[in-house]
Image (cartoon, rainbow, N blue to C red):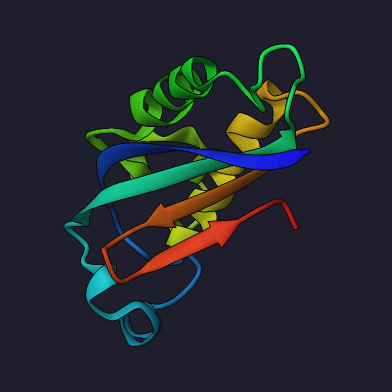
Length: 136
């Protein structure tokens, strides 16, 4: 039997959407208010979902205590109350869009899971703007 289990996490972070190789005018045209040179922030919500076989001995796909700790260590500690552009090495040369943040989180968590487990990250930048990424 296959099941999907999910755990929610939160972090608050600032970012600026822009490309260093574009002019100020082009950055403003493409990214608008999100291109504020003084940055802006979000209260991000993530949902980390793991899909796999239910272990017949434990009844778990994954122990949620393990998933909770992974989210705390790899996401919340790394991103919470940070300027993503300046403080998070993964975004040194990567525009911290919601899409790219979800991919970075996926890439941080996937190696920590057993190979036979599937992972999906859903990142809410606002209650109405969210993205999902599952490694494809």
